[in-house]
Length: 259
Picture (spheres, rainbow, N blue to C red):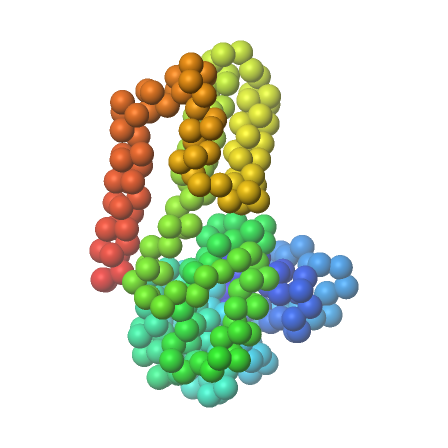
């Protein structure tokens, strides 16, 4: 229910993995680049209730301020066996249960922006009403648009550190490009070199799993260019500042989720 950027990406992921028929409800026809030979498995309607009648798993992919309205609309139609998944930020399981008329099979998922290219990092928690088999099914579904981690403490889902990474990564990339331009690279050259530098480094870390401090020390050779840069960063206590920024996000999330 709801077929904006996130909802459309989820629909596309499910269709690409051939997990069955996918229904989407939206006031206007969603523009989804459907996978090959999947058109017959995708159905669009303007009626949320029609979706509920047709599926076993219902994904609520609307803005947080409309979740209550949507759930109260579909609550009378929910069947006990149906699983309700919400990706709405700041909407706790107890709220989802209350607004859905006491429905027991509820899952709260917090994905991040790369979900849209099927590279998302999602954290999720299931309400006590789900069986082990149902949790495995939910894990399989979520992993169609990236990877996931099941979290027992719902407070951690309020601030998944993966959620802020696109903005922090973009800011780092922006600085690298800016310096590249200052020393003589064209905009296109600086963007390409910096972007691949970041992407390649992340893939290298993922593949080799080095101890991060050891990797930093290995690249920061004595008298080299990386060491020169890190001397400035250490003087400015950049990591402590970055960590303070991340904690500020956590505190803000706690404030928002108390509303």
